[in-house]
Image (cartoon, rainbow, N blue to C red; front, side, top):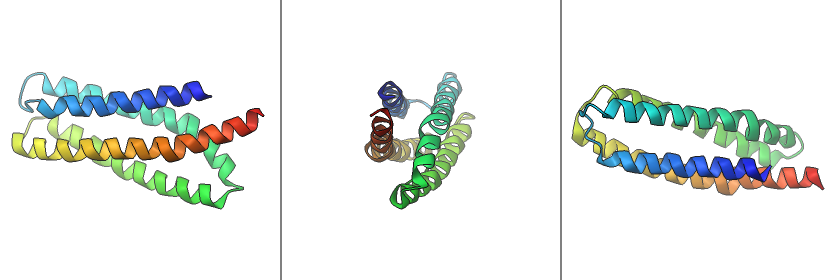
Length: 137
């Protein structure tokens, strides 16, 4: 199970890196839509993997753990809100737009993505490791 967590952490790093790389993107360039679409596909695939692997197991465990249940509820709301914002951003700028607005938005979203990924790794992935280690013992 730790292989899954390592893979998800690697995907986090890759997504954060992708957002950092597109900070320098000229939003009205010919290659911009392809780069943004690539990140969108990677983000959606990552979220799908988490929703099919990590979160269901933790939801099962949360039936006996009120603190975990509350934590999962908070993360679920955050994920939906953040995913919506990220997808809207990627869709909006895939058609071009104001470079200054793009730079402002990408800088803000890049910081949010980095912070959320760290939080998820520290809290959710750690809980998942604890849960799966407890089941393996």
